Image (tube, rainbow, N blue to C red; front, side):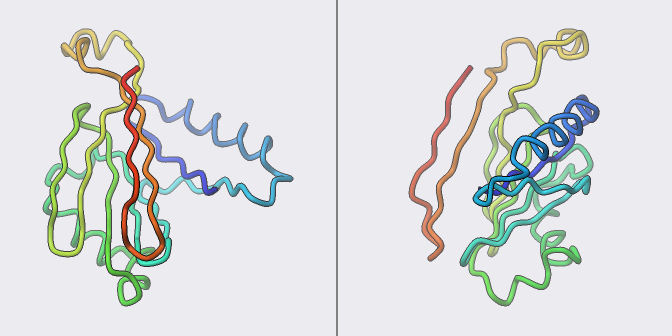
Length: 149
């Protein structure tokens, strides 16, 4: 298991604190890796898949993400060995999925708190959703789980 942290535009301090707590908790677990990176875009290669993660507040056009994934120095070394790329984002507070040549972009709902900013902007009726995806190394997605909280 690899745990990747991506800070949001509302929870930077809390995400970094959670990162440190989980690093300590899993430090002696050989089957769990907590990726200690504060980069705003991170990538994981798994078989024929390249997964990209970013919050999405700095990427306003989904069509720009596949080219960003292809040229980002942390991901471009993998493109000759993978068949599929997926970018996971969460900033827009609703689910949106788009496919581009060789890359899918998935905006996922967040489990954000109900704070004053969200209340004033009218984000009070949006479901808070947790997602889990299971992929095969050979490039086939098997399962997707979605739970509204």
